Length: 191
Image 1: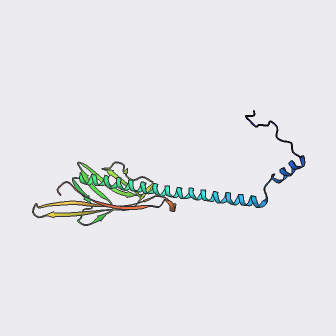
Image 2 (image 1 turned 180 degrees about the vertical axis):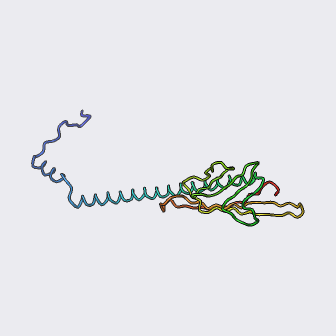
Image 3 (image 1 turned 90 degrees about the horizontal axis):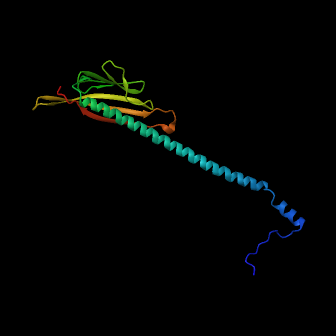
């Protein structure tokens, strides 16, 4: 009784038949090579295009995140200083706008200004502190003094409208993104 049908040696063939089989399957025709190269080129092109699209998308997301976080931080830091201020020095006149903001908190004079497309905060005569990163640039900065007089209470309330326009600092068109935002903060002290 045979369980396995196994041969250790392949059946013997005619040598002429073996040479014919070898010659028949030993290479590719020129047409087959051209088809393989065309298929390979198409696959390579699709993969390269996918990488380009992914890189462009990553760049746009990174630019948007960087601009948004810098804009949010700059607005919040400026707003916090305005709310705690004792007095507003610049802008000094109602409904006027200025590219610098100067206010007094306790005994310190705080000044916000743009220089070299960056936003800075300077306390007294100390070295200015950089508020925005070098990855973004300040396109416009505007501080507008708003006043409201309450005749019943005989008090004047002063607010500042803060407006920033920030864009991503890149020459690549794939990484271009800009955003504007504005908010208003009221000076807590009675002026």
